[in-house]
Structures are given as structure tokens and as C-alpha cells.
Image 1 (spheres, rainbow, N blue to C red):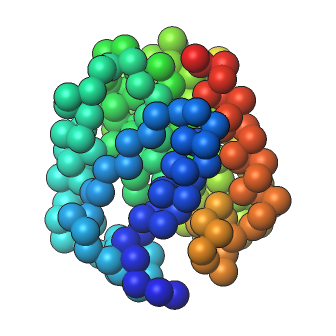
Image 2 (image 1 turned 180 degrees about the vertical axis):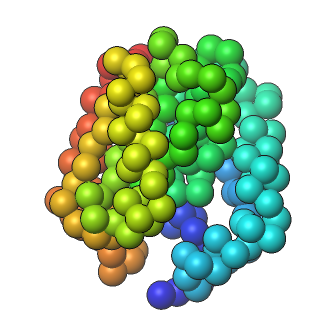
Amino acid sequence: MRPRAPLDTETSLFADELRRAGHVVHTPDLFDGRTFETIDEGVGYAEQVGFGDLIDRGAQTVAGLPGDLIYAGFSLGVLPAQKLAQTRSGARGALLYYSCVPVSEFSAAWPDDVPVQVHGMDADPIFVGEGDIDAARALVESTDAAELFLYPGDQHYFADSSLPSYDAEAAALSLHRTLVFLHSTA
């Protein structure tokens, strides 16, 4: 695997697809330009910096933007996206890829007026093995505004075409579902 920040390539590739569809996309760098060879190295850096600090970095990047945004995050990027969608006034929606934390991490309940999609693979050792799928299922049970999309497979970064974990079929379907979501929340 070539050196890169977790989600750096994926975020920009996915963002490019959304921009081609006519959407304005902001891609904050939560890792201060650092790059890592593996997911574990990126997570290690996040643990060193502190997950709270990474969440705060995400929140700071939107401080000057209007509140009526749709927040999206991939893997660790879900943390600030989910927090902002749950707590920032005016949020229009959330797109959470490969991760979901219990709603109670950020507020008492998911806002009823904020639709959310969670995307992950049904055998991803991180998404399933670390409990994210359970948090996503609990979210879906708690509100009619939530959808969980599971794709067959065991890859974490399944939508990143620059990695061996890329799954073209799952990536295309998640992109399609994302575009439908964005159109429906416009």
C-alpha cells in the first residue's frame, strides 16, 4: 500500500464523484497532512492525538460554513460527521461510511429531522467486529430517519478504487444510494 492518510485518496475520489454530480463538497484534513502505510498506523496516530481532538478539528472546519449541511465521513471521519449531524443546528443529513458510534456519544437521541445513511460491509472486521454495526442497527431502530446499507464482503475501504480492498459493485451501489439521498434532501 502506498503511503497516504487514511481516507485521503478515498475522500477525494468520492468527493470528485459528488462534485461531478453538481454538489459542493468540503474535505477537511483531520490528520494534519500526515500519511500512514496502514489503517492501524492511522488509528495509532488518532489515539496519540486523541479522538476528541480529531472530532474538534472536524467541527472547526465547518465553523465558517452555514449550518444547513449534509455531513459525511469515512471510517474515523465518521466521528466528526456524526457529531455535527447530531448536534449542529440546521443539519440536513448525514452519510456515514464504514463506521457508526452509539448516538449517546454525542447527544441523547438522533434528531428526528436529520436523515442518515450508514454504509458498511456485512463481514468487515472493523465495522462488524468493533461494534459499529450494532450502533448502526440501534440508530435505525431509534428513528425513522435512518437507513443501514450492508454490502456483502469483508473489506473496510471498499469504495476506494486506489486500494486492493476496492469492490466495484459495492462502491457503485453506495455512490448511487448517496446521490439519491443527496437529491432527496435538497
